[in-house]
Image (cartoon, rainbow, N blue to C red; front, side, top):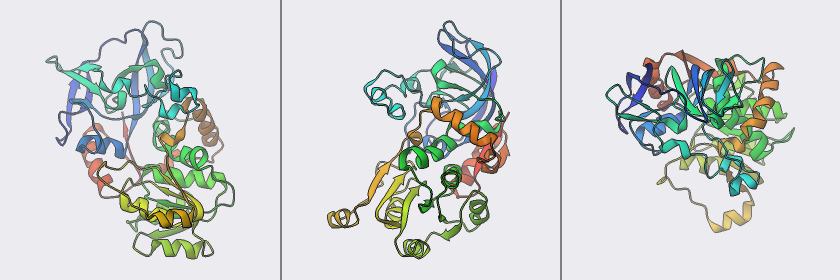
Length: 359
């Protein structure tokens, strides 16, 4: 029996309860969680913006230690520190064959399969396949990435989503080069990771935009050279900071149609707007045919930072060891399982960076 934060139905409050985990079967691994990040995607699953089967144990950004392995598991063994991977690539589908494992056609296979049960026998689903809002979880072997040496296990949880997504958006999707200008809309955990990644890339200026003035100090700590409060004049302000051109790269880390449109307007002619946030299916964005031609901007989205976690995690670990990437700075609150609902409220209000559940 392990404690977990359970979502019984979409829109219902999370319930702290005990669940029964089975012994890991063939190809499965049991992991004792050290920490789990509270991501906006978890909130979107809880309130119905994203779909999930219920009852479900949410949480997809986590790290921990292997405690048991099933038959046939070869990549990890008991005692290994690991990072959870909520989008594990199969390596054999059409998109994996194209070298795009972040779009793997089978990455979500585990989302709809039950993995544990309540004491009364009710079957439970794992949030995004990993169920990190629990003291322990059982996942498929391919949903784990061995943690390189030299990275603290607790803060390593952020590598599983926020940092892979933010770093990958800059280095894999947009391919920001030294000296290029960057504007980042939305300074939650992912947005702050984008700021650090832009700094590592040698970008400049790096302009941070948020609706909360208290985010300015946090933004500058992560690499922003300038901070703007979001309003209807933000695009003009960005142009003033970029010699009248607009940013070479704009990153939208909110997942809202109006913010995508704002990021697009702040991008220079011929520049790139990268959508990192996950929005709702009914939240539309519109462009005129003339402006698409005239501005010649590129609008694209990235999934999981267009990352291959097995290859990118060692790169991130080296940045951490060298002091270029500060995981601790991303964490603004350390909480318990009981405090996840409060973390959801804080996130919805736009406060803080990353809340981290520490076990």
